[in-house]
Image (cartoon, rainbow, N blue to C red; front, side, top):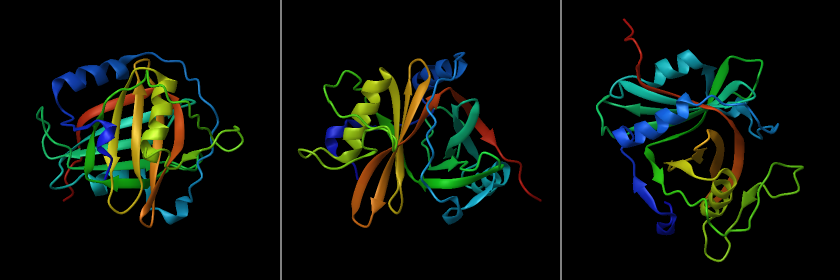
Length: 226
């Protein structure tokens, strides 16, 4: 569970005021400006299929509807957050989430990089005074955070990412058995993803990826199989 100092609140994703904000993000015309950052995950240890089959297998009864956030980098959408719901009506609670990643740029397969039931929104704190910096290997900065002065690692990395992006919409996910993820989307449509890793009883928080451009699709359905 996350610390109370992280200002979390339950997120009913389909509330109109959230959609108005996110729709604005989706409609922005953006120039892709991002760093090349290899993802340090072994895809062969995950469930991987082509995107259509993954969605068809997951978006079934009782979660009939789903929303997608496609996080773009260098013109590609290799990271997709899938939110599963049982109704398209405003105020519907997200029942389950999946985070899909394409690790091989030459493949059509996406892998289930994380999944769980906890989903919500966190407060923007872009004007925080933290001094930590994070980066990928070779950048000269640490990629992951550890506890510091009683602050949880997830908060330490997120404060950096929020400061880096400026005013942002921030979603968190929770998983009891595996990694969970935070998704920060700035007002000008740049993004950073943070992975909260579970190692036994210990969690560490790491900078996962970043890029520019987020496309959002809402209330999609999958045709029933005969």
